[in-house]
Every structure is written in structure tokens, then in C-alpha cells.
Length: 519
Image (cartoon, rainbow, N blue to C red):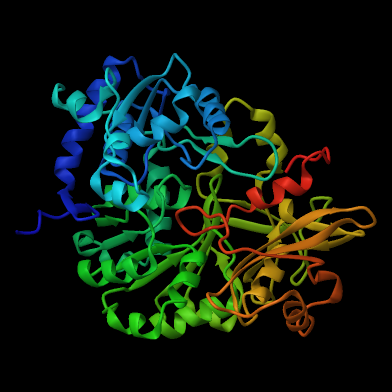
């Protein structure tokens, strides 16, 4: 069968031309209008990686509505909060997920149910019964088939209103006004810089972007819809699988990959025979973001894949603000890059003063369109997050003498042990070097004498003979004594998102229950 005309999108084994997706999005836009969705309203998306997620998101933008993709790992109450707080008028949801959170949907929200497709049924072990829309529901395919496409002119899409996750309080919806042409140009320019896309000016149809993680996260969501607008071909994985990712790169001749460090850990853990099995020569750039990457992990990926591994840093509020190439990282191990032209990044002390090189402080920054955002329904949170004209990211870090930013960890994750600040990311990076450790999570738990103590949950490699004494002995060679975990738990499997990122909150919550502290 001939390949569809470029640009196209492929999910699982199904490939569709973008022109077909656009037609279906225009039909969805007509339907949203009939439901009363208008400029500035919200369409909530409770979908795994699926064509309906793309069509509904683009369709909402055509009528000027915000799209709020919801993390479908949420509990029912977490889902209820986002639906209520966002004021969503319409919800598009997979049938099997409706069974989980249906009771949380406010009665005022018009719900459209998408039959869970075969690729997702296989990936998430969904039965045929659970995958079907319930009787009487508005079913996505039937609904679209009865609609005619909305005709131009279309509204200017305000984009996604992503709810940021955090360790304290409810998540916050980051809301912006529809971008001006100048702002959109700035967004596209940043993407060209951090994606190495200037080499593809005038030939974006040669780009094949792989998104292996869930698109409800801000980075994959932004990359997906921005490169769709730019005319690239896009491969979206239904669910991350390390060997499956290599196979997909080889089969589709992927040029660009968006990844998070946990994916690197999974890839490096593959048997050598599997690593050598697939042709990865088409890859010209791997953009990683989202979490600190342990130096030995990143060095391992550069040794394997070559100088295609790049990194950018930012937040949902400000977008990408720093960038570094593989060589820059090798010259400055551990860095997340230098500020991108037009962006401001500063390390500040508690009094809001800029710190000199080498001194850690709160990272505050401004992207190219950052000043435009508010926190939906709570401008007070927007003001509290600000440091003058800049915005706090919640991270702590410092600049080296050459102006490269290094992160120490999340301010909210910081463990205060007897008045001493400890950052879990540093300990996690060292734990991953311990023989037999496949993955780990470090966080603070209550301590009657010191306020908090360091706790580590460790997932051993299959068959590894490992114990607390061996772990501590290894860490003592590289960490100060007060950073050594006082409590170590070994578990067969750490709780994870689709990306492999650990749900640290689920591990931490039982220790703080009844302590009167929000986590």
C-alpha cells in the first residue's frame, strides 16, 4: 500500500494524511459550535494518544476554544477538580476511561465518547466491552459523520490550557491569550532552535518526529501541535516501549525524537543484541526535556547514538528557555544549557537578588511570550510565582563560569534535614550508579529529631543481589553522610506514568498522612 501524501500522522499501524485529519477537525469544530462552544471556552480532552486527540484539539482551536488535556492517570477527584476549575463545556473521552471517572464529570459538561481503538486496547489490555461507547452516549465517529466541515475564516487558536502538576495544592491551569503573529513567530523560532529545524526550512515534509510519551504533558503536546502546524510528519506511540521505540525509528526513518531521561534509562537497559538490531542512522536530533538526566545516563546515550542528543529546559508557564548540544554538555557535564536568545534566566537568592556564578538559588526566567499567561481563575497564584518581571520555575540551580545553567533539584522536593537542604535529584543520580539498581525514587519523610530524613525506594535489576548495606557503602564513596538514605525500601516495580516517570507522590503520601503537611 502506498504511503499517504505527506505530511502524515501515524499512530500504531495506522497512517493518515494531515489533510484528512484537518477535515475531521473542521467537522468537530462545527459540532463544538453546535454545543455552544465559543471563543475563550474550554474543551477538555481525556484521551490517550489517538487520532481523536489530535482532531478534537485542532477542532477546538478552530472555534477559538482552549484545549485542556487531562492526565488520565488522575484519581476521580483530581479529574473532577480540573473539569470544574477549567469550566469545560465539552469533554472528549475514551470509552474505557469514562468507566473510571464518569462519576466525576459535572452534569453541565457535554460528553463525547471515543471508542478505544485496537492499538490502545492492546497496549493497555482493554477488553472489547470496555472499549465500546455505552448505550445512549454521543459516540465520536457517529457524531463526526453527521457534521459538515466548518468553513473559514477560523478563529485564532489560543492553544492548550495545561494544568501544571505539583507537590503542593491543586494544579494550576496556565492560560494565555490567542497569540499575535509576532508571538507565534517567536514560538516557531524557538522550536527551530531547539529542534535543529533551520536546516529543514522549505522542506519540513522531510521531518519525521517521534513522540513516544503521552501528549497530555506540556512538552509533547507543544511539539505535536507546533510541528503539525509547521508541516512535519509525526509518529505518535500509543504507549512507550523501549525496544518498540527503536523499531519505530528504524521502520519510519525518524529524524527527530522527543524524549525524557527515564526513556534513556530504559533504552540503555536493553540487551546489547537488541541495541544493535535496529538502524538508527536516520536520527538527526533527540530533544530531551522534563527532568534532570543523570550524567552517566546521558553520556551513555551520547556514546551510543552519537552527538544527536540535545537538551532544553523550561516550564509550562514560560516555554523553553535554555538549550545545549551534546558537545556543550560534554564540555559542561550536567548542564541544561545556556539561555536561548530572547529569554532571561536568573538564579536568585531569597531576597530576589541575582546570584553570581557558582551560587545556587531559585531559578526564575522569562520566555518569549511568558508575560502573557495567567493561572486560570487565580491571578493571585500568578503574582505569587512572579519575581519582578520574571517567573519562578520551582527549580533550584546555578550558573557555571561559562554561563551554563545547572539544576540542583526542585525547591518543593527539597528535604530539610536538621536545617540542611538536600536535593533528591543528586542522590537519585548516584543511586543509579550502584550495581543492581534499575531505578529509584528519593524523597523526604518525617523524622522526630531532624524534621525530615532521606528515604529511597529502589527497584532492583532482575536477579540482582542487593541490600541496604551494599547500597549505603557504595553511596558513602560519593555522597556526604547526611545525604545517605536512612530508610531504604526495595520494590519489584515503582509506580509509573506511560513515559516511565515515577509517581513519587504515591510513594510519599503514606509517610505524611496525618502529619498536617500538604505534599
